[in-house]
Image (cartoon, rainbow, N blue to C red; front, top):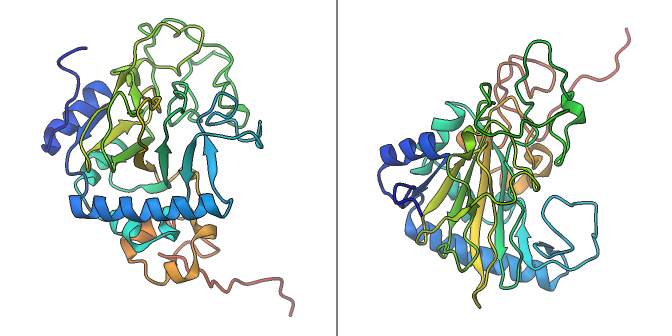
Length: 318
């Protein structure tokens, strides 16, 4: 292992430098430890209830891998996902505040951004390692002036462009980052418990991973204590590791994107009314209720914030 790869740090500046050089950082105290522990307790309660009520979503098995949403839907998974955490406890909303991790988020996506998704992944013993991927697989690749390209509406999780540049060292043009992921290690991550696999420096490879071309590429496991976060550049190659211990590994996954991109979870439709009533303006902005340069509006582009009870003009006659 390269001794210069990122290690857990409490320094925001060191973390930001690691992000730039390696495509990820390990930020200790990303959120306060007491908040981390309360979030873990609430997550365990929620996950157990969803499992008992047959509401749980599971993946991470040989037949049911992440991304195969319409395949093998009735096959059992191993790892458990918990979606839409802003609806599932105030403690999760408390995480959507200006904690230490926000400075690293700004380093990737700038001053204004959205929460694309806020969920959890409980990596359980027996789960298989996830295929390497990037979090902005949908972002169009740069092209030369006379080069054919795949239109954005034709991009798939396994089809990014018409052709692939096999040499990761010869891409002069690379996409800019549009996404960052903050994975908070609620009970710590290690190689043994399925710590996130990551290919350091792959954010500068200029393309997405390919199972055949990159079958021999080496990924390392992100490791850190409870409350530490692995924060990634959206272009870096990564995936959930295999948990070979006897205990569950719990992590929160908060994906942030630029304000001009479509989010994974539709908070403007999915947020509960009782939850919305208690949101502050910063949380409303993160969850997509703030109009950005006229985008995301309902009618009037001069509106600042949206409401769940908008009364819009319908068909009129005089």
